[in-house]
Length: 255
Image 1 (cartoon, rainbow, N blue to C red):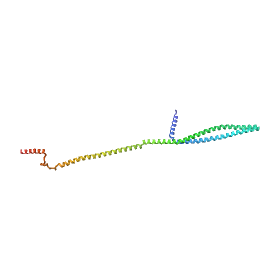
Image 2: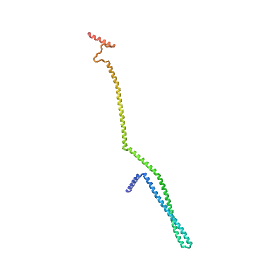
Image 3: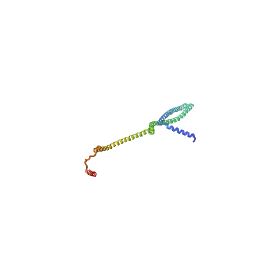
């Protein structure tokens, strides 16, 4: 394969790809319908011309046929009058018109077939155009819906991968983190208050007990420098001890 053949194929392939991508179904459908309408107009004009030619040929054929009959009658008239030469000339003229009529008849038959074919083609094209008109709106609506869905999916994909969406997600995570920090601070503050009140409640008991002890000591103690009374009543066991102690002291005095 030559280099130029390969290059030409690549160029054609790229060109076809560009054309395919550039085709808009809505616009192409509209343009196709316009083209079909133009073809319909041209075909109607062709049918009209063919019918006109057919009528003209038919008129010429009728004229030639009429002339053929007329010269046939004249030949008979001349022959009946004994003018054989005039009759011969009339027959020659008759033959010319007869030949022309036969030729026109062949032409007229061909034109009639052509007109019938064109009329069939015209009717077929009119049916296709009517069908295309009914389908055009449906196809255009489907093309619009498909295009809108494609754009929507593209937008959703772009949103999912865009920096704005990423920033939104980061801010959402930051808000969640701030809420967690706030909740933790509240819990810590509540715990500190509980501890402080627990200390106060626990301290009240100790302080109350300490105050009671101080009051008890204050009620039973003597002022500073005051000696215990010698006449203080003794209990039974204490009296015996004191008596024994006193005896010992007397013994030491008598020595």
